[in-house]
Image (cartoon, rainbow, N blue to C red; front, top):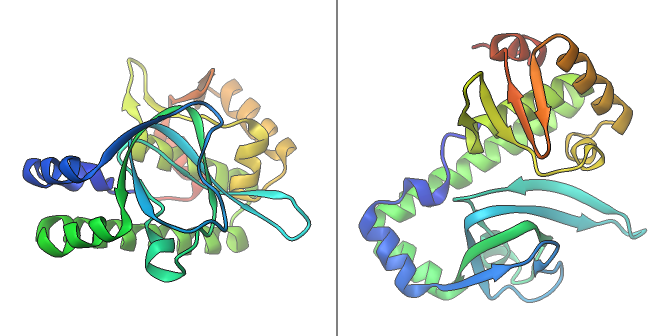
Length: 223
């Protein structure tokens, strides 16, 4: 479960300083913000919208590695480690982003202690989530991993609705299956089962969690 996003952790002064150093861009649905293998020249801060983080295997198959949404920072690791993009970032729907040069972003963190702390916190959180995901592939079933994904999306980028907690899920069932390392049939069966038991309600691109406690039990998580 994510605790917060990078933009949400900044104070007003840090946001203003970052806006002054940034260049706003709008990416249409399906557009690549960056492509795996190209030089890393800037980072992206997502103002609104969703992106997919994708890598390509040696035999040309695309692997969905992560999903990032409003407030998240993406593309900063490559500039610090290899200098080249380690993944392709593709827009899901329209995405509004702030582009900040890699060197400028480094200077910004060096001169804004609160922002640097927020960045370290977000990086540590992503490492924790990646570790949990790795353990989940080994120890949890496909339906458990799906339940955890829905709970995490609702916690990180969801909102309270009239009858429950709504998670934006801008992915096809096939993409969800790729993200959690399960088959599409597993995802389809689980969603159908949970709908029939009034645990969730599904709409286009959204899933409303009607019974969070039951979904947490399926995910084997404590409330």
